[in-house]
Amino acid sequence: MMNISVEVTGEILDYLESKVDQGMFKSRSEVVRAAIREMIRKDLQNKLKEKGLTPEEMKRLREEEGGELIEEKYPELTS
Image 1: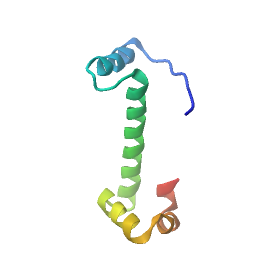
Image 2 (image 1 turned 30 degrees about the vertical axis):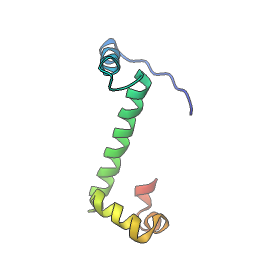
Image 3 (image 1 turned 90 degrees about the vertical axis):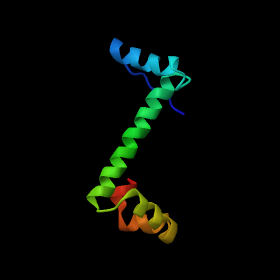
């Protein structure tokens, strides 16, 4: 794991703290990591949509054809 430093406004800090205070996350870092994972998920969904694929179809392709073949057919989805 790598550490980074991020400056946020008081409003954002309050939001992060509220998620921790509500017991949804153990730390502000966990809230930020979850937000980044969500951004990555949405980016992947948009890439799939551009290719005319649903997440379910992508999962089926992975299961049926294997990850290497998907990388060959859709390199922009895996980069």
